[in-house]
Length: 457
Figure (cartoon, rainbow, N blue to C red):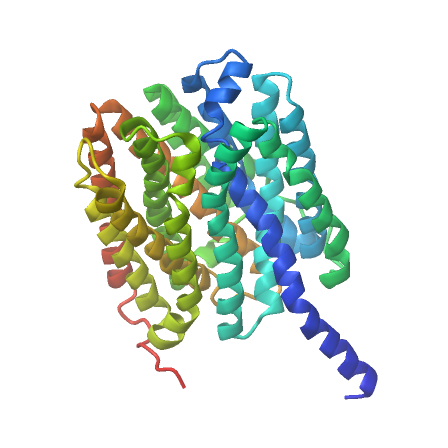
């Protein structure tokens, strides 16, 4: 290797960490926007003269559209280039954030939230697949995904805290406005740090019907659950069955059946659905419990999640070590066990509980399970990816994560609201616990021939 080649390799290696920080920054903003609207909803409803109950689409529309289009985003990423699609997604997210902050009415705000989800659907799988290719060695990749996942997950908690602070001290519109300069910074610096894409096949058709069905199906299901409309629920099921039929027959599906035949990836994605459903439910219901049951204000409720964030980051920092010692399967089981213990504690929430005794232990258990479990499942979902299918694998994993979370939130929160008082919270946590236990049992049964635990060398 000549001196020029060595210099290029050294520059490539030196730029990987700043590139990872940049990719993580946009994912942090995307994660913040999942939760940042929760505390601000009453203020938004007051400005638009709309009851809080009718604002649910401001929350769920973002995750459902993002999750529904992530598979298409992953496929587009593979075809047209990872850096290109990351930049397009970041630009769309920034523009949609600006429109949301300036929205004159509720329909405009909801449309902007849908557009934010579409921006995420391009940027998130592009970033995840870029990380997988920038860090090809398994241990390096686990650490890099740990950083990316940790920053992303902490954004969920920071979103709640920012929402309370910004809504009380400034105005709810600034919860979207702060995205614009940071996303612009990502757009400016990305071309300097992330390698350019090679030539891509542009004549290949995209599976637009599949993407439309995968987005419309969950939207219909969630609408049916939230509105107690059986026809909408039935329509959602039909649309999802139609998606499976389309994928089986189309020449260029979003997810080739051969991809789904990879057992480790398939099991990892199935388990992710149940785990994400439980995590989203816990996150949302604990926010309501702190404010509606314990009577805490928005700012205090947001600060109460700081231990959650600390436990989450600590768990993520140790996950790479656990993966090297236990392997992917048993690390995922540790995460599921921590989540189950946290949920079991929350099942016993009293009608008038205290934070330190009744909320904090369950919160910390769920946080540890989220950090360890989701990161282990991300690694499993990216097992054996190549230049040709890294975007598809990332899109599938992010899609099942978000759709599982959104559907679980709609169903289990519906259970909580349908019951009286805190009894509904306990029932929802119980069903979430059953889901996590089912996921753990399914993981064990489906991977009996999984690799044994590995010792650190």
